[in-house]
Length: 564
Image (cartoon, rainbow, N blue to C red; front, side, top):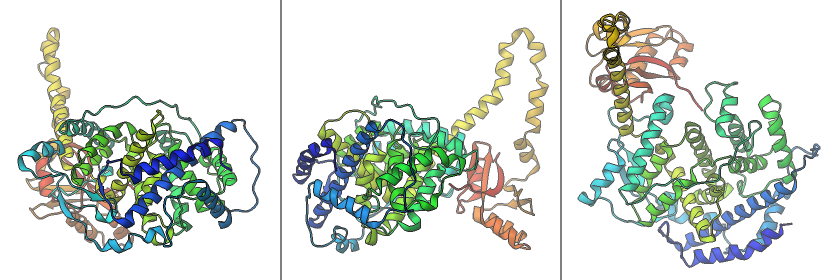
């Protein structure tokens, strides 16, 4: 049974769907095929069904505020009949926009032989600078594009001699600088289009300090790092992913089904009380409940995974009908501006969803289905909206998720122009530290005789690793350290063609006497540490002589690369 609020909102759904059918919503501007029109209608049904489900859960939660004793349920998993029956009931209650004899997921299969446009993408020049130069070159023009993910432009990233850098390849301090620089760049980027980037006031919700649901991501991660210091994504999320991947990737409508409500409630309470103590039994949970709780987890975060306050600026950008490349650049900067835990979690989530989409022919969950169902959960707003505003927000949020799914492999790479700015900031900090003793001398005029020569500072500078390295090691030669291998150090003569993977290969050859040593080196990477960078895990294809020239004071270390 649905609540009165749900029944009352059914006409509202019909009105919104009529708005869509009349194409009164022009943002973003899509080219539509006849077959895609039915898919769009069905996808919007998915969206409104998800909205009604969220409202029902909210009402139910308010009615059940008194603590109740949870009794064990018979059976370990919900049977297929229960989930399908719930889905059928929803179909009767919500308006059906389209009826077809063929499965909706197959409506656009015949169009998938269309080759998308291919375009090169450069990370070397500031995006805002590129936009400023566009009117002079007339390079970008307004263009429509289809909603199908296979019709979106295929970007080929230009790999420089420094290689490409993932967000996790830089130190935490350097990534903090990247976030600040990205926000500045994003403001300048929107300003180039005459769009003011304003952070709207949103209702602040205080998160819980313990449990799983409603707890800030940062708090969850802090708790998890007591067990695994290298973890980047909350462990409970990784468990949800694993549970769906075990048996749910081919399950039809995996993120549309409601699952067994009683069991979902029981598992939620058990997770809140037992997960952190490693007492929760995952083997009794089926993939449907895991999918339901995955959505609830993101929906109940104190602040949304993605900042909804940036959406108005993105909507204004889409209204100008820019090239898909411009949309990518704006989204790229938005992702780089996210806090570390949000950015890493979003990357893991998109990787997981792409695994679901890879089984589209069996689970009927394509890019557009996933994006419309997940938009209300990932981009939620606690402020009140009018119907049209809510629809506009949902449509844009779904479009952003689709872009993230399509370009997941390159959106989490740090633009090289931001890394260059980080190096300059670090160089300025180093210069300031060197000049600081001189400044102190000028300020301490009363003790100027004692400050003429600062033995401590002089001693530190003389014994600094960079000073020793510049004097002891010839030009173009680096000493690489591998503390976890048998061959712990090696001097490498660089030339213009020496890559990071060549240095790794040399260490592998020197340690080839042991199979365990070979396995170790396969799981390790070359790092650039110190100088004008905190820590930088180098691309295997990076030319080391070029890196050496921009950071001659760096140390070079081979060590394992952390995973999620």
